[in-house]
Length: 62
Image 1 (cartoon, one colour):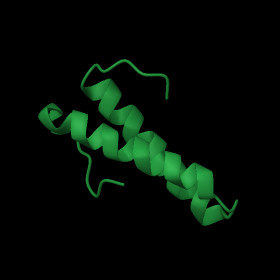
Image 2: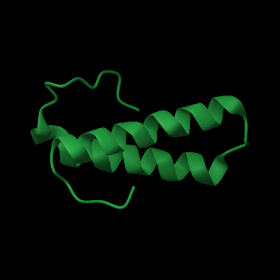
Image 3: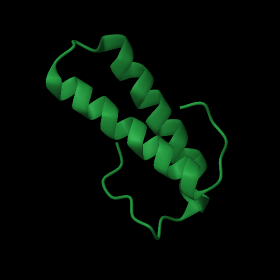
Image 4: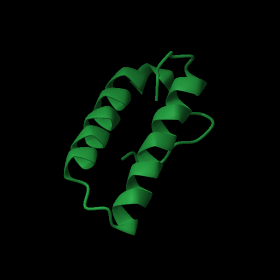
C-alpha cells in the first residue's frame, strides 16, 4: 500500500505503483482471513488503484 497519494501524484510512477498494488491485492485476497482489518486494508488498496487509474487515465477493471 502506498503511504501518500495526493492530487499532485506523479503519473510517471503509475506503472510501478499499480503493479505493486495489484500484487499486494492479489496476495491479500488469497490469504485473507476475513478480519475487519484485512477487509479495510483491501479497501484502501482498491481505492489507491482506482485513484491512480482515474488520475492517470489508465483503463482497468478494478
